[in-house]
Picture (tube, rainbow, N blue to C red):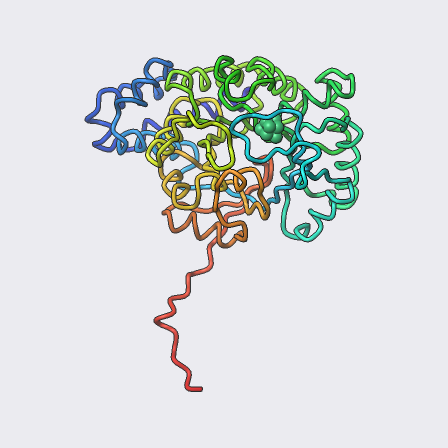
Amino acid sequence: MLSRTLSEIKWRSELSKIPIPLSVRNDPLLSNSLVTLIEGGRISRETGANLHRNSKLPGLTALARMIKQSRFGKIVFFNDNLHVNTTNVCTLACRFCAFRKGSRHREAYSLSAEDFVSRIEPFSGVIDEVHAVGGLHPDWTIENYSEMYELAKSRFPDISIKSLTAVEVKHISSRSKLSIRETLQILRKSGLNSLPGGGAEMLVDSIRDRICMGKEKSSEYLEIHEIAHELGIPTNCTMLFGTIESIEDRMIHFDKLRTQQDSSGGFQCFVPYPFLEDNSRLPEASLASGEEVIRVISLSRIMLDNIPHIKAYRMNIGDHLASIAINSGADDIDGTVGHEEIMHAAGSSTRLDYDSSTLARLIDSAGQEPVKRDSTYAKFEPIIPNPVIDRQSLPIVEQ
Ligand code: SF4
């Protein structure tokens, strides 16, 4: 707790030393927000909504960039990871989801523990994290997950397992007749290291009832993360935007997360991502434009004063927007990923074949400094990207 308080003071004091760009200085809304943050205050939901609607993009991104800089300088983090989806069979049918299948669908699959491990095997020499989420399988209980994690840990003890959205935890606990706390305790013993944070969607129940009926309530999402934090399991948190929510709903979402973080303190990273519409069932969605995506990422950096990291999730927003986002408040672009189904089923075309050095080059070419991190932001390694070969300057060799 003390170190968190000290790091709070540190970024605010660093923020006071950064030269203020004209785009911030000349806009009273932005400059007042800057003063509020430097003085230890918090941006209210009302001010956040006002910034969202009325601030000009260059000023908003500049303020978010200053905050990011006060925390991490020019550093942008990434990691070597692999996504494995455990099953696409799901008892729910969230309207934004292009990934789930009914259990009799010809493309339905459910991995065994051996399947899970063989997905990891080819990447095991380079990754330090496996990110594993899936649907709510009607027949699976805690044994299925324990078996997967135990087998993976026995083969790859150094790979961190970041797995299960809050609704999966709830589903496992109810299928296994255990409390949430017992479920997490057992899974941690089996090898679970952290939770990825997916499934927060919009933490406003009237919106959830329309886009993901049957999913856990907002309070349950927060409670599951709170219990994880109490058990010392770090988690991320997310926000799906660009469906049917209002700007005020987004502010409520930010406010609930930071209130939760004030009390339980275990969120490592916030991951905002826009709804992608392919193969989904949400025709009334107001899709977020590229500008809006950057606006939301910047606002998240400004509003979430107690969550250390903001991720530009390139699997969802693509490399181009991710490059802009890391100059607009985000300090992380996730990882190498290797395989991804959830965003690609919904229309993402982000490449999956990047290695560490390609990611480092992406960060470097956006004017930031790439640092490889481990899954829980405990170990860091600065990476000097390989120079891009200028083909024009290569000598011509006579054949
Ligand atoms: S988002 Fe998750 S819970 Fe909802 S339908 Fe898709 S897989 Fe199931």
